[in-house]
Image (cartoon, rainbow, N blue to C red; front, top):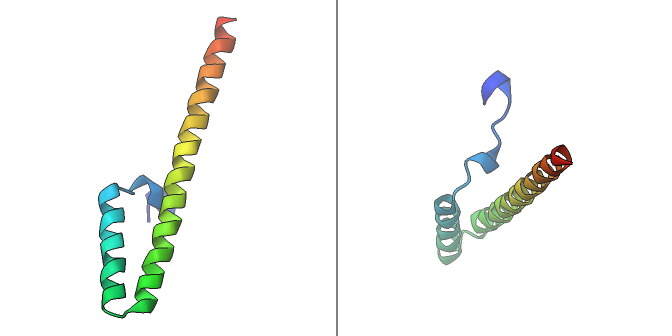
Length: 75
């Protein structure tokens, strides 16, 4: 749990290294025939990649909003 009893946002802790480790885990599970675990890892990878993409889009949007506000202040 994060500050004030809130669940921490996993996208804040996401790293390319973690995604690579999870993907290697998925591959190992597939090789070992642990198909349920492989499927869970694949699903989690997809969820994390979506989170990462949404985070990037949000950051770009916030940057544009900030630039727009700055432009309005100049006018």
